[in-house]
Length: 579
Image (cartoon, rainbow, N blue to C red; front, side, top):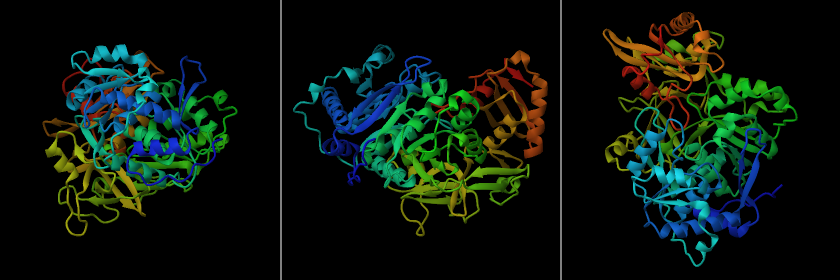
C-alpha cells in the first residue's frame, strides 16, 4: 500500500497540484482505470503515476497550443478512462476551457450533444484513439479539429512551458444535465473547482485521513469530475475508476473495487444503491469484505432513508458499517458539493407531515404514519453559506419553513456561458444587509431541521392542485410501491393543463422482468390510482404504462420530468397503454 502523502499546499489551480505531486511523489499511483473488456472480465487495471500523468498532461497541452488560442474551448468526447483525465487536465494546463462531454454513442443523448457543441463552439475536440473515427464522423459538419489524446507522443512535452495559471479564469464549462430546462454551461473557474474539492475533502474526512477514491460516475457529470479527478488531484490521493456501463452490467464490480482499496470513498445516485441491494447475488457476496469502506455518498434528490436501509441490510454481513452513508446535496452551479452528512455519524432521519409540507411547513410526524414523508438529512454546508428563502418575497425563512435553497461561497460558479440574463437571475440574487453579497438561487426546495439541510424537491417540478403543493418524487414513490410491475425510479409524475385547472399524470415504465402482455394493466392502474388518492388526496387524470427505456433521462441518469411531460403533451405515448 502507498505510504500516506503529505498535506497538500494551498495552490489555486489543478495543474499546479499535478506538477507538485509529480515532483514530490513521482512514483505514487495517481489514477487507475479498471477496464472490463469482456462480459465476465474481472477487470484490467491501467495506472498512471503522478510523474507519468504530469508528462502526458504537458505533452497534450503542448499539442493543444498548436491548434487553439488561450481561452478556447476544448470539448472532451472521450470514453471513460485515463485519456479523459489527461485531456481535461491538459486543457486547463494550456490555459484553455475544458468542456466535459461524452462520445456520440451515449443512448438518447445525441441531440443534446449537438446542442451543447453548438453552444460551446470548441476549437478542438479531444477523444481517444478507439473512438476517433466515430467522433470525427460526428463532428464532420462542425469543421473542428479532432485529436486522439493517446496518439500524442510524450516528446511533444519537450521544451514546452505552461502559461502562468490564472485562478480567476474559467477552467471548464459544466453543462447542466437538463432535467428541468435546456442544458446550460456553467462557467467554473480554477479557484471554484479547487475550493469545492477542498470542501468535499473536509466534508468526508479526506483532508486529514488517507482515502482511496473509487468511482464509476461518468466524468462529464459534476460529481464524477470533482470526486474522481479534482479532489484526488488536490490531495494527492489515488483515484480508481471504472466505466458506468461496466457497473450497470454487473454492479458487484463496484463493490469489489470498494473492498479492494483501503478506506474507499465513493459516490452514487440513489438508484445504484437499490440496484446493488436487489441485483448482487449471494455468490457474488462470498468473500466480499466492506468493513474498510470510509464513506458512501448519495447525492440524489431527495435522499430517502429506505434506500440506505436496504443497502445496509443487503451488505451488513460483509462488514459494511451503518455510519458510512453520507446523504449529500449539490448542483453544477456550485461546482457540485454544497452540504453533506459526515461519515461516522448515524443517518439523519426525518418523518414529516405530508399536509404541513404541502403548506410549506416541516412538522414532525410518526414514521409509521402512512401519510408521513420520510427524508434523510443532507448534513451541513462546508466552507459556504446556505439560506432557506421565500422564492417570491426573497425573505430568509426560519428553521422548519420550506423555501428555495440559496447558496454563497467560493465554489459558486461565475455564471452561465453566453447567457447574461439567466446569469443575473440565478447567480445575482440578493438578500439585503443581513446577508450581503450575491447569492445563487438553486431552484431546489428545502428546509433546515436540527441544523441539517433537508432537500424536498425542485421548485419548477412542483405540482399545484387547488392551492396545495405536491412533490412529484413523492407521488412517484407511492406509484412505484403500489404495484410490482412498475419499474423503480423509471417513472415521472407531472401536472398538465386541464379544463378545470391542473391535472396530474403518471408515465411509468414496466419492469424488465415482465412483458406488457403478462401485466393486468387495468389492475395496475387501479392500484396506482388508489395508492396516490389515499396517500396524497390526488386524483390521477392518466396513468400511462410504457416500455423500459421509454421515459427519457438526463445525461446524468435522472428521469427528465420536463421532457416526459413534453412528449406526453405531444402525443408520443398515445400508442402506449393509458388507462
